Image (tube, rainbow, N blue to C red; front, side, top):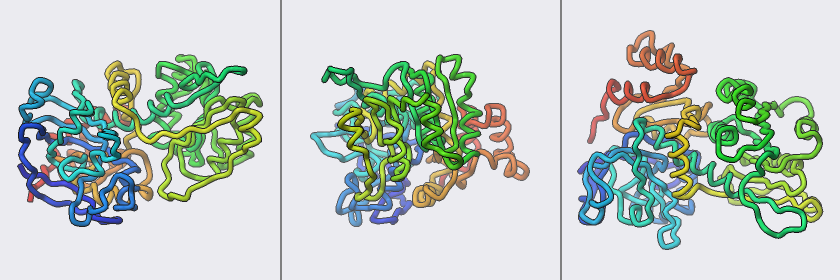
Length: 422
């Protein structure tokens, strides 16, 4: 079976190529990929090349397929897995395999499986680690987004606190507590706020900061203060570019500081602000992964000693986190479509990945079976004046508060030009 896939050969060296996949054999699975959402981690892998912990040292001669937030449909199943999977099954992938302790992951480390591809061969290690997850929903993009949502769920679970006089770690955010989400008006930040407001464990106060008022306004129009209040959460949006941000954030907390602080940008002053607003036994989660291995920031160790403040970090989620994400989506409790601001075909994946930090907006969603440029949802109306497909997409998204949805996905899959193989 032939595939067209975006492969990494070295630092900032991505190539869209067509080649043959090995057969499924007895222990593999062949599948078609329908969509992949581009993660900043893919940009980091492209920037670092073989220096990245998950990219093989010999990628120049044995390139791997990039993209790890993907979903699709199974085509052929090896005999070993026919009791568990069948042709036609829809799936999502948990890339953090941890197979025999290795960091190897789909979308970084394998020559036959990754999200930016038309077709893939899924190796047995994915199934052995129970990381090929059946998906029963209609929208492929939801299964694709279950991976980034699982990362947020994992971060929420990794938080911990200790009652005074106790050494028992109580895992998770503090229920009924105060949470600050710093630099959080981007796609992952929106997902975090969505889970804080609509998840199983909720704080009493959630403060969302950013330095871009337009991003804050968009966030507030999607995750509204009124809806949060109906869910028992006092939601505030604060622009930290103006005024006295540290004093303002402390004032919002009524001077106590915050139980849980999430830092969603790898910027030293943001980390240091997060440290400064921690309350007693406050836990700072450094969520945003830096590209610089030497990244560091100051941390107040006086408060560590006397105020029991502490820090935690996670990279990705696990399989249970992804199952939790799919469950919350299926129940309609969270809506990760708010993360998506751009869509495009597979031919747009290379430039979108290499220049991801320079492209404004949130998640960039790639539909791998079709061919069209990366396009902002906000631009559908303008393009629709000369292109009837974009006109139809604009009507659908406008009716859905400017958000991507299953109806829009169907239009892309049915009406956008098919990708030419070879």
